[in-house]
Amino acid sequence: MSEQGLRFLCPNGHLGFAPSKRESFDIGAATKPHFYCCDSGSSDIGPGPLGGDYSVSPYEWQKHDLEMMLVAARRQEVPMIIGSAGDTGTRSRVDLYVKIIEELAAKHNLPPFKLAYFYSDVPAAYLKGKLAAGEKVEGLDGRSDLTVEELEQTDRIVAVAGIHPFIEALKSGADVIIGGRSSDSAIFAAPAIRLGYPEAESYYLGKALECASFCAEPYAAKETVIGEVTHEDIKLTAMSPYQRCTVASVAGHAMYERSNPYFEYVAGGMLDMTNCRYEQHSEKTCRVTGPVFVPVEGKVKVKLEGSGKVGERYVGIAAVRDPYTIKNIDQVLDWAREQVRERFGDEGYGLYYNVYGKNGVMGPLEPIKETHSHELCIVCQGIAPTAKMAEEVTMTGTRQIFYARLPEVKGTAGTAAFGFEEVLPASAAYKWTLNHIVPVDDPMELFELHTIEVRGAR
Amino acid sequence: MKTVKLADLAKTVRSKNAGTDKITFDIIFREEGNYELVKKSGVISKKSMATLFGIPEERISDFVEFDPAYAIKFTIYRDLPSGSPGDSDVFGSQQYPPLLDIEVPVPD
Image (tube, rainbow over all chains, first blue to last red; front, top):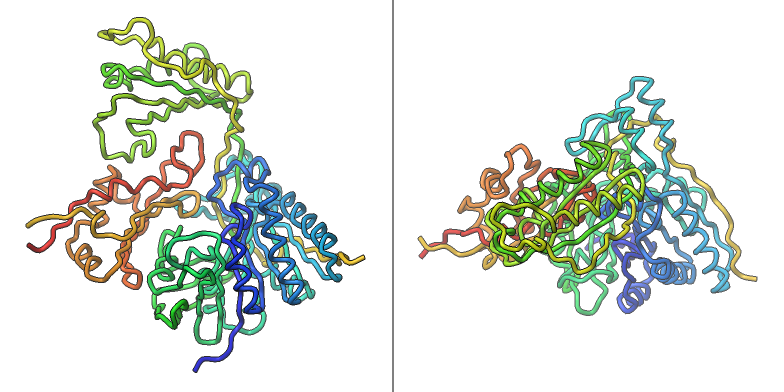
């Protein structure tokens, strides 16, 4: 009935974050897919890794997954495409993955192949130039347009690649592509669109496959899924023996981690899933039809992510058991804040409390306003320009919980318990400074593409 | 009319980041019956969710009844971008529990 399409293997929703499972990968690889694709990044991990330029995925797990994919793809002589190298997709992470690929090629004595890689890093000066020229860098998700002040608070910026750098890399004859920060759907859509498949079906394929087995049931991560795109539909098939792609699991995945299940924005347009139809094609396969792609009017707009350092950070932990103190915990913390203020003034540092047992998880969103816990754990974070100051802010903010002056407290030998009498150094605090889009004349202008020959075989 | 807790009707109730500035909530049902029951009851609406979380309705950016997945989904703007100093849930993954206890009227 339907034509033979283009088949993609995806082993993992975030390469390296936890290792891909071997069994379902081998089952998928045995079906000889046309492409091995995987995204390796996420903004979910918070602003620290981008700002501080480090990975949260262990090197051994990154290597494990890259090795599985590289060996299978080169043996079958089909392309392997990775986006958002090393969690953040910064230059240093792309270089790291390129090095891993070269080492693996040597280890497995692979015949020579062409490796393309691109950087996504955006210099702040480029955006300053845009702002100076009166161009608007539009804020997303309720953010206002970019200002010079926000740029100055930013340590590192990446542009989120659409299909363009992947298509250029494929045109250059790349067998393996290592991408900087990328839209996860573009990693899959690019090769399909280059081969003439419709944009709507190609992007939908990417959207459904990018988290691998999250589009299958029962719930399981890191299991391989195969996606097939034709000119009229998309089919998703779970490879692990205990999973299936069902109408519920695939439609359910269309909602995952997105504010709206109908619209997906990429550099160059928007995928509209409003009229998608889902049907059970066979035991383990769900078929989807009806996505629509709406190309952007005017210039292509590329999404930017930026992170800036807020300060050095220490953490302190205190606990309270006295019911009277628990009842008056807000006053206790006000007292501790006041002691920090007396020492350091009103500004130039940050002091934050999470009160577990009261509203430590939800903060102001917590609907339960009355605390019934018999004990509370208070986590104090102090953030300041220097580690020394952050330590003292945190020390004061934590220890003064012990000395809080409450009018009727019975325990006059200390109003808090400490599991240990110290505060702990933590990694520096960062914040997301950019979640914006910038219009570009040339979709490649933010991406620097390189191609090398890898000679594994001696 | 008697009521049943949402936790006893839904297959999945979850929350998660949708980008750096939003948290999205999914309530997914196994079958059409419970989905339609909850949808028609009107207990889950933009207004009732704003009341539950103590936020103005403008903080809810999206509210969708998504028939293909038997799901109700809504998204809120965060107070602070994920992982900022003071954020208590970097992944936004533990903001859903108040939904579990929502009482849904069911026919006797």
